[in-house]
Image: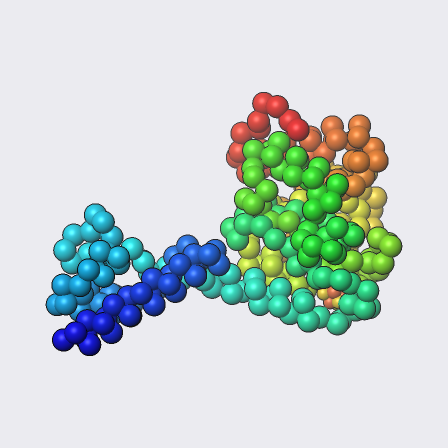
Amino acid sequence: MADARHRLLSVVENLDAHVRHLKEEGVREVSVQPETLAALSRAIDAEGSSAERAVRAPSSAPQAAPAPVQHKEPIAMSQTLKSIADRVAACRLCGLCTTRTNTVPGQGSESPEIMFVGEGPGADEDAQGLAFVGRAGKLLTQMIEAMGYQRDEVWIGNIVKCRPPNNRKPTQEEMQACLPYLKEQIAFLKPKVIVCLGATAVQGLLNDMTGITKLRGEWRSFEGIDTMPTFHPAYLLRNPPAKREVWTDLKTVLEKLGRPVPAKKR
Ligand code: SF4
């Protein structure tokens, strides 16, 4: 009996450690078969183990399941995005792989209303493996917050996932080589709106060579998703008065989403 109790305690401790690890990895819910929970519950009841307190939900009825509930999507989502990021990390489809320090697959919410897409990583992004973390990234964060979101509530990425040397514009071939990764991300994240940052991003995503000054502020569509072209934050750093036009475009996005326009911008 003592051995059985010890094994049960060990199972519960391992389960607890595993759930804590998943939580640290960002997983919020896991799928557990009802029979598994019932069997565990019966075993705990039979042993009268103190481990019962560690796994039972505090307010549950006698037969109620512990905290984990059936919900498969969060794990599937993380695995899908990780799979894309892993393939990007190993990608050698264009010449940018030879000069990159880190790949920059993009990051953010896994169920974003808005996806911001720029042209490619710069020096800071290349060093950190994260999109929009330099000066332009700080300005993008301000734009996002002005809209009433937190940065981690949207998705932020680029057309190309590796830094072009000397911050040159990525070529059409490089953008075409990399676009399938972004398409996969878009198909999975299903944003309600894409905000396309700058002329190069518009060229890469929409294959439209029209200047951004003409395109900005007018709705376009990418594979059925409303897409708003606007100026790149790096351009705003060089030309601050253009912030007014960008704010107009972002307010149009908020209206499309049915979100209130915050009283104060910036
Ligand atoms: S830029 Fe894109 S296509 Fe080119 S090597 Fe990097 S991940 Fe691959």
